[in-house]
Length: 299
Image 1: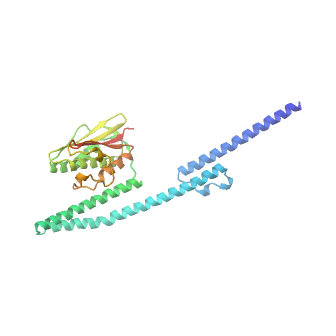
Image 2: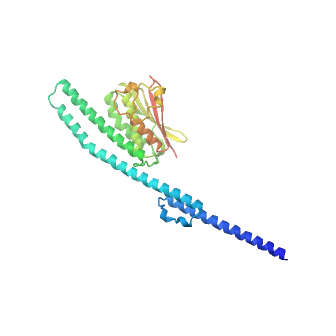
Image 3: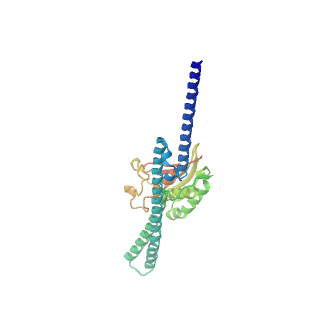
């Protein structure tokens, strides 16, 4: 009888130990979940959790999250500083550049020698180039630092394509280039404003490098997972060795260094595409023109 009693007591004790262990494990898991949830919401602080009451695992996680929270705060502060610096640069350079453009225009209206007129035109061109460079750098820096956030949403691509084409129709006509569209209907997840910026960069690139009498064609191709805005041209084409480099910041191919531009449009287009879970692809060969495709996810 006493043997059964001892066995029953041992079994009861074992059940109590198991129950207590499960309770402690459940308690730790709940606290870990609370700590992670608080950290994900951006509200974690060392004062929120009393380390003297934590287990070893909780204590280590708490120190890790405290360090991560500090890093996140430092990163936010750095982004705010970069944002302020970018705004200051944009604001402080706007007036001087506008003044240079104004004085260059006034100078060109004066009686000048042929050389003087060339100099006035060069000043005006370089001022416009500087203004464009500043604007593109501001956009790129804000995208890279996360100051400007892209918000993809489902929508019809044709409206964005038509607006972009309309912007460059006068420039193409002035250069003697035929700018046409084919099938432009298609749906995808994209930010309309930034996607239009990306498409404009592709069209601008095509018009820039296509000689007079050439053609630039814009169309939308729909695939199972992506919709692609394709911009094809009859320009000089790009060698395979150069194709891997053209999306770098400020890269200019050796044969086109004299062309207008600062070599950042394709880089910005790639940044916009990647932030929308898309990508940019180029198909080209020397003497055969180029096709740039902006792929946007359909879901």
